[in-house]
Image 1 (spheres, rainbow, N blue to C red):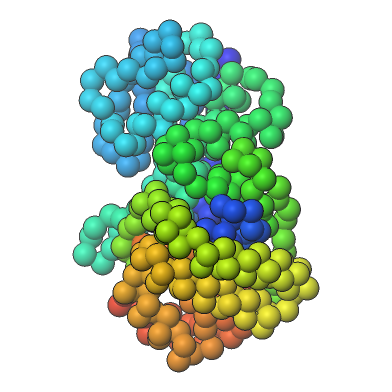
Image 2 (cartoon, rainbow, N blue to C red):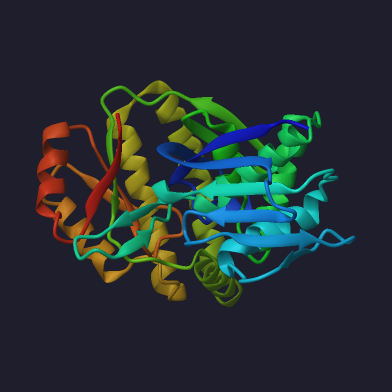
Length: 337
């Protein structure tokens, strides 16, 4: 056994392909500077110890013969469920007691009134990947990247109620900046690295309003069943737009990229209105209306309905002016250019 293992995994944003990726469309994602850090070392106690930056204190636990995590004192609740799923799936063969430390503090931000909010940039995906990698490395078990990714995705799928595409786990696992990704099956994703187009500027914004990805995906699936014809037509549009976006991205045609992102957004809005999914909140709509007064395109990221939005422009000056105007309702947490 190792004396200690440390793993660092990035957060992510979905640039395009949200929802449609569930049905095989291509998605473009990017990693962010915010990272989850997981450390595993030998415990100096006679029991296992778990600690997380999201909660104060430590949480002693034991593991039964069926790889169930049993909390000996306080239960960390939702912040311990991922560890429970990880042990149940990975079934590590441990010869000593462990201290497992999960630091996801970079995925939280303090608002102006002092409230700590969780950013919707893939913290659960990052920690799923980090726990998987750390446990394999600590036990000195060799495994293929594909198997590690499959195991991490299995953990995340259970955590998410077996919903979602798994592309966020793939992006965090790849840790290669910008990637395009297609879901072949829930545990099989084809992905490749993309370069960031010269002259394309992006600000990642948060409104401070959280959202439930599970709820939004459920709404999307229910709406698809009720409005199958409209959703089929939209999916055909999604497929064409995402394929063209991949070509435009690789060629570096910034104006065409923004035009295609806008076209994709138009289709998402149609589905949101038809199915009452909840992708566009009032705040997102207000921000997009402000963006239209600048040379800026704005959209929610990923499932939408919550805190993260993306503002694109070919003009950095216009993007900064826009960002300054909306500073009362959203603030910057990252930039890509």
